[in-house]
Length: 115
Image (cartoon, rainbow, N blue to C red; front, side, top):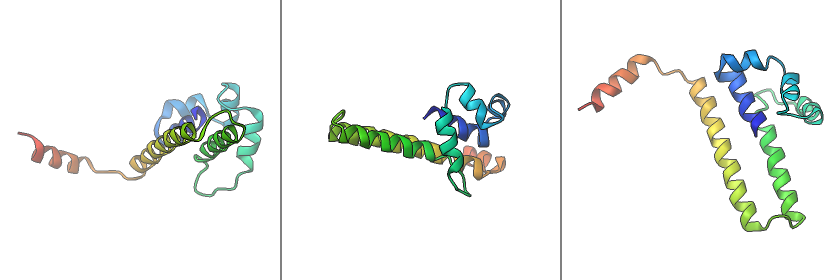
């Protein structure tokens, strides 16, 4: 999850993160990703971004934990709900970065809501 959030911020939002992690290998060096995860991540062919890959890994690990009786179905449902909530937050970051709202519209809206 740390890797996913860092990757989204890296690519879309924060210039300081880009400087801190200029390549994916820097995520491995920082301990946010293992060498095996990096190799797997690099093999994924996704023309529109790979930000979702670590979320799939988490979902698969949670399902495996349920199958091995480490967690029950109630806890699995609760944890998956949190993963989906986290995913929604990432999608919102992408949308906010993708769509630029001109400052004039926010000022007009503020003018209508001020009392």
